Image (tube, rainbow, N blue to C red; front, side, top):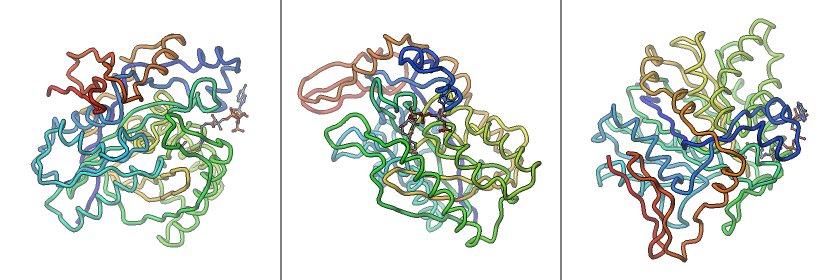
Length: 389
Ligand code: CAA
């Protein structure tokens, strides 16, 4: 029996910021952002979007082609939860019209939560082959204006349906994982921005990838030449290069060129969207599968998931015949092109207009009539949403 990804879809808000504009405004050389860090644009979150709306909007696209009847569980990976008690999964379950007799829960461990959800989904479906699990990985990467992390912000959600009919890719049972207590990145309960030692975080990421790669090879009796490409968690796209370059000398020059080309393909969407924490790895996978013309069914793709704090997992997928046709049902490039590019003033206004304070009844700027799920604001300390399918 094979278990894997039957369908996957992506959503990002309809606003973007150009990184050259940001660099100029922050007194940095544009090439530092576009080459040194590897970001060209970032999606910007309006105050009527959050992880619930983005997760619902991603999953709604997926559910256009899939029946909800077989979905037995909703796992929502995020580190940007909207409530300290109630799970984003329950809000999402409601708007997506999933049946009541399911399990729905939120999973948190920095950027790793989506991968834990994916692996739980795989295990559940392996035990219950007639059931499906909906996994959502949604986040807002928010470091603050005038911070070093500002260039690595972003927002979005990826939804994946896990089943015994993996039309996109089979999840091979070859994971290696590790946990190490690190003070590299965190967000105190009373803070709406992440606190980070970005350089330490980068070092932890590289070290964990290398450790897991060595373990993966021994545990699975495989080598780098077994891989057609990799998708990485990409807090910024240069991070994938820093990780991959550590192991490239293990193959000949021709294979190195091919793997670097796959890496560029896997970075393409992330370069335009920015970081989306839990969803970043899966956006990178989507980018690789959409952009590469050289991949084929049967190819093995390595995935490296990293969540600061820190926890990491390395595993592989095998591509299924016809995966391109399944993915072509959504046009991610068109979604990115349709975003309205903000001026720096509009971006800063949008950034500071988020409604974190529940103590006042207040309306967001939700335009309505968009057909998408929107956060309407606060009433009686409770979040109000609208979603008309
Ligand atoms: N042209 C080309 N390149 C240039 C340049 C120019 N004019 N000027 C500088 N650069 C290069 C630098 O040489 C450097 O390259 P290397 O990393 O290859 O050495 C790169 O641009 C960045 O320069 P700095 O290190 O000086 O940049 P910085 O101090 O402003 O910090 C950052 C960069 C650490 C990524 C920062 O943006 C940050 O803290 N981001 C948030 C945290 C983060 O993303 N951490 C990554 C791992 S954590 C994780 O994975 C979890 C998660 O999602 C957060």
